[in-house]
Image (cartoon, rainbow, N blue to C red; front, side, top):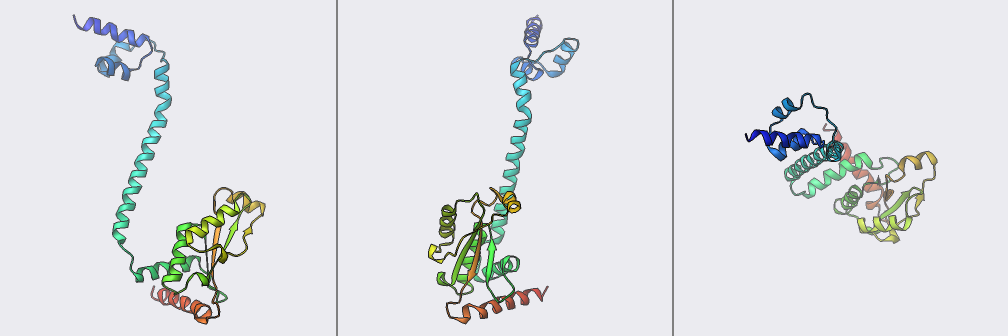
Length: 223
């Protein structure tokens, strides 16, 4: 007797456009039973069902995105533990790797170019801690695009690198249309060009460049 009013409730909800999932949740009837009861019954989903159908892919995408972020974070945290605390020797080698990829090897000029603030900050730290330089030996030239705010960008780099604006050279604006279109909004602070000046001390100029190249060759020759 109990199944009769329950079945009526089930059909009443179906007539109102509810899905199998919602009916099953509300009344506790299995989807298999609902499928048997409704096999010949036409169905028009109501607004709630349509909203759930529409939101389904979005919610699924959000779940996948969250899972990806969590997995990435877990891997990064494990990797950081593997590295531990950098020694001075570690810093020397990391800086050499950076110079190998981003530094000037010609004309006996020490220059490192990059747009990533953390990478440029590492380069400056390496020049100070490993190469024995200070702010007086380091100049910064910022290359920007027409959509960059010059004052904001210079202030940003000065703060990030702990180098006063007095050590900054003339800012360059790249107005080439093909480059500007590609880089627009992608480099919010432009590109920092870090250069070394000897201030009259050859150990901080030509000799230092030769030493850096010697370090690089010593590493490469062992590969």
